[in-house]
Length: 307
Image (cartoon, rainbow, N blue to C red; front, side, top):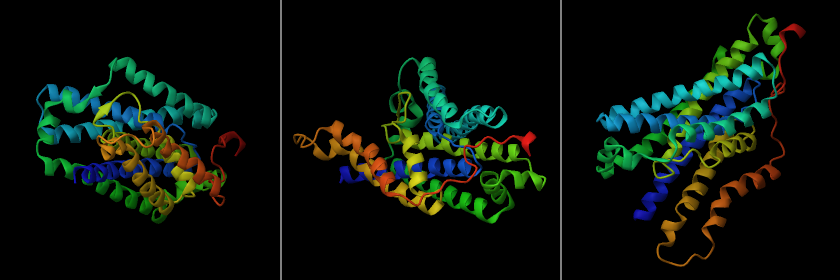
């Protein structure tokens, strides 16, 4: 029963993270910006949350308020990190892939430079320790993350498909010159899309912490890259994102719980091989996904002077 609960909690956390981060990628890439920096944005969000929980716990803050504050700070940190992608790619027309990759390399180095060592929330925060003593309440946190992610996905779907803002975001990624001709700034729309993506990816970083035993060590184990694979495999659609996020949620929940499932039994397959599975599956999936089509103007710098 304990193993089942562990798998279920990991499933809720992983799926929630993949849902919000792949949705973050959807928003930014629909506007024309290739968001390779999702991995780094998640790391920054996880770091911001960990820092707030650590220092707030040391100060004796209540668990509920501490969690909420940590989540808000993580989202704002994600937004700020996304602006570091927006400025060079939108204003200075730098290469999206190279800029995003640089941010992904800087994020873990920067956080570990500040922290010097990993931070375990369970051990370092009295507030979360007291929260964890209420077992049933602790389980509900995981389901709550999943529910929040589901609501956000529906909200973003509505924004992108049923509102003028969503129409403009999609136009910025398909035909930016026509959008500018209509009197709408392509730059502003892409900044808006990346800001929203940063908020979501920062939140995804918080969700990812629950998978790694509430411990931040300067990485999110490639979840941002898998979210990009989900986005591509899902053909840049909300429906595809949801389907593949659920699939990878199941995969992560089983592979992450492999040691717990075995118990004292000898390893039939080395755990390192099991840990590779979540990264092998996206490669295989992308080989067979042939109808995926990115937004027309994605990754193409927009020059106002050429308009």
